[in-house]
Image: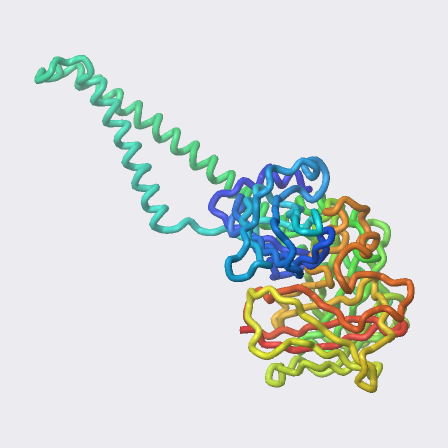
Length: 496
Ligand SMILES: [Cu+2]
């Protein structure tokens, strides 16, 4: 938790949004098991902090009686002592759908604990919710006008009341105040006016200091800059620079924690057109910078997104851009992957089949109808082999059935999603009281996240809970592993 920031994030005139390790994608989507119950959770984070988060829980089965929700700190003090939970309300139209509202009182790495009760007993899980103020909202004009009027009315009123009290306070009814009292009353009014002006001045200074602090808090939580440079022909060096000077003191690169096997997940997307995507895993060098020896890459302009998780479990995405010359680099290894292909095609955006480089394909079971912004859904994909049969050679890729990146054409939205949803695996682990590399709890979280010893039992389907944050054109990169080879399927969509 960024304790010092908590102190200065006193919310005045602000709106707040919560974001995961993502850019421009504020809601939290989650799929997992609360004991015997499989549930889908969406957290729509408040416009103001303190503010009200809207929670939606859908149960996959019809045997749930009661759901309780409560917000807590993700880890550390406070994460073990929840306030009294709220009971989520069951929808009258849909008995498996529950909704509730929760006050989020502070910024930082939070979680929402969901307790489920039903015919199979009780179950519980926690959804990480990184909450922070995103911008400052100007005061509503009519409210400002009203408050201004009241301020003038009260200030002037106070001066006149003080004057009247001193002039006429101990007169008989009907008696005219003597000139000496009138003079003294003028004096009292002048002094009162000075005192009132002094109070107003101090108030303005206090207000200004709070507003400045808040603005700094807003900057603190903006996506940090990925500063990149090329060394020795193909060595990319990445360091992070926060939007607020305090950031690098609070979030130290030497303390970031691994998230599904890696300290950093680096995405280089060739722009415009998004006709190439490199998903790499830089190593941390001395001093906290990250380095990656790049593979072969064509010259071009690249958008940089780099996911890290700080030691408190708060996910950050560093954002940057770099122009690269043609690079002849090292061979791909480990979990690194590359996709190159046709540029984003807005016209033909309803294709639901993506050919894979290895000969198979990924079919998106998207149903018909347009895609709407702000609708939570599960994106389900089926992997087929060359013959069109369900693929039998799927393997876990970095501990999971798949990874998906949802990227808008203008680069304002970037979301790295897993079968368990939008939370980082490391935060999920912290939220549920485990260790901090996201892979230990994989057996207990959600379908598609199990890591069977016998790879022949990996199912050919993978699903990702997510919702587009706004309208526009998006490219979805779906990444899976088949027979030791990472494959990427690409889908272009228009979101209404
Ligand atoms: Cu991933």
